[in-house]
Length: 444
Image (cartoon, rainbow, N blue to C red; front, side, top):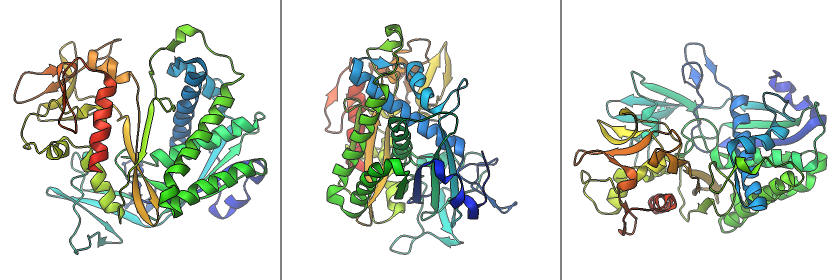
């Protein structure tokens, strides 16, 4: 990456500029350095945004967009390998150079420090503890994924505080010409990535969320710039028009992906699938809902989001006792690891157990609307979990361990839904997804 002094960044490569995004953190952003800290106290240094991480986000969302476009055109799903062939034409691969380059700047604002004391996790900014309206110090101990970062002897964890501003710029690489469609697909891939996912760690649980405060495109994309500005102005200033604005953003992004694949070669049918093996951005396999709930501050938002992903909260929603059997509440679909003290979910292969690591297909972001924070729940339906719960294609099989009975494969367990209705096996993976989506929605 080319290093540019901050005061010279405005002059850098302006003739090749495709997109400039100004971002503002609305929840803490946790960026790991060599010691997984954002701020290195001993060195007096702060970690900047990592360009490779941002490129990874762009590639991920480009692949989801292209996967959806292939499905709409051919009514079959691409494998990751096929989708990556299309992505590599734009973003490069081990054999080709990316048509875009990304630069970043961090306006180093305040640092937030989380501290573990006994069973509590507190936070402070400029050595001032974060308190609620009643003046009590807030305990972030309910944020399960935050607690995981304190495993071991760690007592402190730092990040960028809400209000920190970032600048991202996308440039056209000089290696090749870019069509307008390619330019716009690159723009939408980055915008969807930072809007839905965010930056840094624990982004599926409300941390790392940013708002897009300013959009600037090159002269050839001025009409797109104006449409994007209207989208984010509608989201920010008018809660009643926010949902419509998000729909416009998604539809235009999908339209550009449809145009992008129109004249490109398709891999042999043997590399395609009747079921989605990867995330595809298509209305049949991508669910989203802007929840009609408003939070006054980020602290309330991240705690509420974290609670919504806990089995204990699901039990409380159904008026179940905390220690009652919970095998029928399929929280495994909200990501692994999800186990403790020999209970919970484990992957088994040849009698070997592992807690596993799987990203949740259901996530939550936050949008600022009418000066309040509003949760945006979204998720991708794929058949990846089918392979895991049945142990297919060489995958380890997912089991539920309980103190009340011997371990059982999760596919043999009934589904207890938010309404209290019980769906007996066999069931479809989509039923598990829908039940989890509705549980989280109800708890937000």
